[in-house]
Image (cartoon, rainbow, N blue to C red; front, side, top):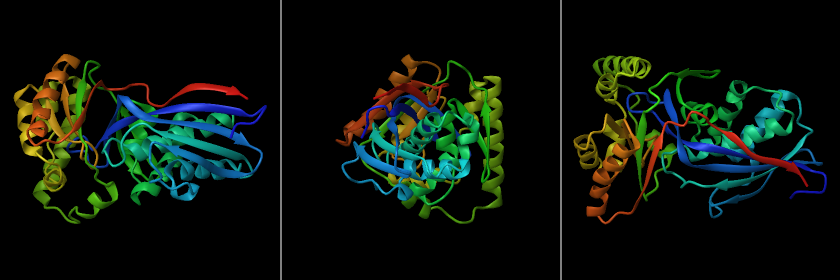
Length: 319
């Protein structure tokens, strides 16, 4: 609750596409459109309090240590030696849970960025990475930075290490766009990680490493043919795709409509296609989406360039 003379700030963090085909847990990019907002307020009482989570219908925990936003802010306060500081959070979920678009990551990023700003911005954006990663642990049980790094920094990111976070922002063609189709079903990241194989063949591992390297090279060179050849996942996609209705047919129609490549966004059920323009993204979305329409399944369609901005402040003030 805002009080007279109390400083507050509202921050937005965008949705993201993680894995990006061959880059399981190491590649991600931010998109325009959906995302989460967090209103953070300084409080006289020490500690982190989550007042409300709008848009989650009481499905997410208010206990800060179990919430991605709350846990991330706790980590930040502890690292800064400011645990006596009080911060209240109101989280506004503006994307579906379990969508594969980094919903938990967006809450963590918006919360940590807002708290850092309320404290006078003692840390740079890159220095916030350990704390947003810690927040993500609350959702999936593991530390992985591909979603949170993309949402925090914007653009395309490569995660060399999660602990400690070592993230490289990548160059990419500025006209690169994507189509995102979100079938209106829910898949929990924690569950989809459990079905993955613990071991992979040497042949598949070698091909996957080659694809990741070639995809990064294709992004840097603006070589769309190389990007398309490299956007192949031989390890995770074959397992997770069976959970997504009509996946193979959507992929075929997207490629026929001119997509550079097509794969699963995060853990799914959202899928994405890379392309060269928003006009082409619309055509690809309609073509791939028709598969779901034939199955009488509802879906959301998002068309977006790669979001280079990442998280940002919406407004701030005192009340």
